[in-house]
Amino acid sequence: MRLRHHSIALSLALSAAALPASAFETLSFAFPGLSEDMQTQITNYSQLVATKSEGKTEGPDVMAAALSDYGIIVETLYASGFYGPEVSIRIDGREASEIPLLSTPQSVNRVDVLVRPGPRFQFGRTDVTPLAPETDLPSDFKPGERAKATTITSAAQAAVDGWRNVGYPKAELTREDVTANHAARRVDVDMGVTTGPRLRFGRIDTDGTSKVRTAAQRRIAGMPTGEIYDPEEVEDVVDRLTRTGAFATVTLREKDTPNPDGTLDYTLDVVDSKPRRIGFGAEISSLEGLSVTSYWLHRNIFGGAERLRFDAEITDITDQSDTLDYTLTGRLDVPAAVGPDTDAYFQTELQHLQEPAYDLDSIELTTGLTRQLTDNLYTEIGIGYLYSETTDDLGERTFELLTLPVEVEYDRRDDEFDPRKGYYILADATPFLNLRDDPNGARLYGDFRGYYAFGERQRTVLAGRLQLGSVIGPDIDETPPDYLFYSGGAGTVRGQPYQSLDIDLGDGDSIGGRSFAGISGELRQDIGESLGAVIFYDAGYVGRDSTPGGDDGEWHAGAGIGVRYKTGIGPLRFDVAMPAGGDTGDGVQIYLGIGQAF
Image 1 (cartoon, rainbow, N blue to C red):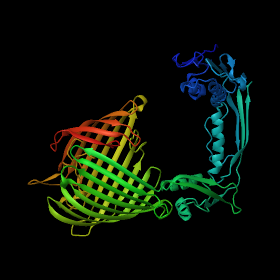
Image 2 (cartoon, helix red, strand yellow):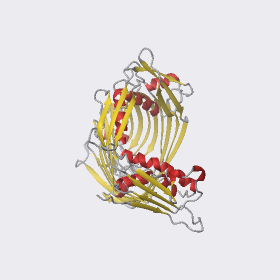
Image 3 (tube, helix red, strand yellow):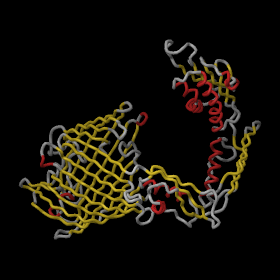
Image 4 (tube, rainbow, N blue to C red):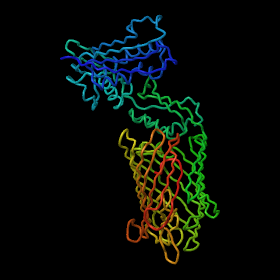
């Protein structure tokens, strides 16, 4: 069978005035009998290609890249089962490997690379001993399969990991005999593992340089001292310490020598994060005005990796002074308060709101526990006291509630500020006991978001959002107005005035609803590297009863277009929207902020 010759030629047109005629002008690759996929791999990894594309055309640079490519090409071929390759790299007609280093040319005009892969090898003998129970070796590590070097490496790692997974942390590969039989085009593999003793977790030692107390580091780490070694437990220790935010880096290293009692100690090395951090954000709407947020954070306020954060928010900043709202929140998080995986929090929130449907002054005190169940699943439960004084179309009222807030968050987005794939689920339930004469009940809220990227280089994103809310228990006139639901504005229906959809009580009076549904859809399209365009449609429903979507409520909708400009902290958002249904507003609304709308 005749070998087909494939070649890839890379050339760079350079100005004769910029470089001499002897500059590195031509780089040519020839791959007789090699698939296009393998050709692409080799050129992608090639240092010669990288050197030429970076404009490094001096002789020593080209020579260094050529010598590096010998190993890169051979290693790439080995990884795909070619163990008899011939590689020639000629610099202006001379084999690069034969050019004395002291005679390296100062200029290079042409480089030719010829790669003959030779025959493809298959596995013959494939032995790894001993193997731990339930060790999962690569499926293609068996006689007759293509003898990829990467498969051998994976098999060796799987054999060691198998023993580590059942309590042998010192397991290591101590014999590796890999023989290529060129006549038979076969690779025989014989590897051996030394397991070492089965060990239990010991203690953690620290170097004492961190400003987080050593006792707190150990408490947060939650090392299961005395239990049989498990590599997943080691990962959990690192994750717990990292999640506190008190450490910039966390490194956990096992000691070289086990203890006489069969335990294995660890050394913990951490680098503290900068203790304080401040942040600022802003969003503006043509109707709602300017909203400003800021926060101050201390990551290690008392020396136990406690996190203290104050958030301030001022909204509805317009030329009308009677619309100004502000919220001040202080929260202290204490890691590993109840076991290594459960944190405690203490929170105080002060609010002064002058909303379209009501005015409110309130204070809420909450304490509770949080737990990060997995990397993506977060839970929180608390008990709180809420005191509020409200004024609305029903008059002046005072509410005192004992609350039991519960929150579950599941986040599988690839990026919090500019998601392109994945989904996000937030479920929030707040049962409350009314300390005055009104009935008890609960406020329920859910937020569900999904993202799907498609098209060329996945530059088009379809994003959807569903919001559902319900108040069960008290009647509409017995519920705190800030527990009721409204629709309209940037967070629900763009193009409709803020909180413009509510429940009409007659005689010009209105109040929020006991049920809510919001639906949003966006089609996002990248334009170049920094710009993006968006078209969107939002719809919202508010109802008198507790079940969303009934005949006792009304819908409204908005639609529009937007522009996104990517920045280091998220896309800068500019949206223009107008009503698309309902009679709660008219005209065009403009929104400007940071991050996607959802």
